[in-house]
Each structure stands twice: as structure tokens, then as C-alpha cells.
Length: 60
Image (cartoon, rainbow, N blue to C red):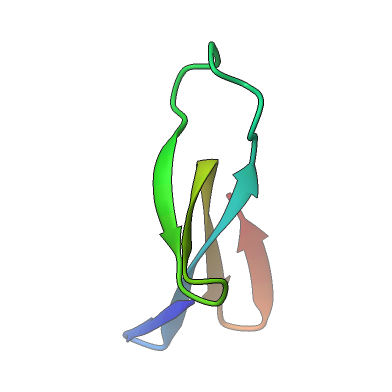
């Protein structure tokens, strides 16, 4: 996760991956290095952006 404070507003970028070891025909899959297991995995990388403005939360 990456946090960025811009003028009192906070942006958080978070990424995760979902393994699809048998899905060879799905677009947007690729080999990604998984550092905890020290292996390459056939995955889809999912990125989420969370924005906090003042006391409200907006999730895009």
C-alpha cells in the first residue's frame, strides 16, 4: 500500500493479485513475482484507489 497526503487529503493505492493458474485464455493475466513465496504466479493484478477527504471516505 502507498499513502500520499496532498493538502490534507489522503490517497491510498493498494494492489493485490488473484492467481489463475489454469486460465490461459483470459486477457490481462501475466507472470508476477510473489515475494512472500519467492515464485512467479500467473495472475491478474488488481489495483484499488481509496481517497479520504476531510472526515468522509470515497472509494473508487
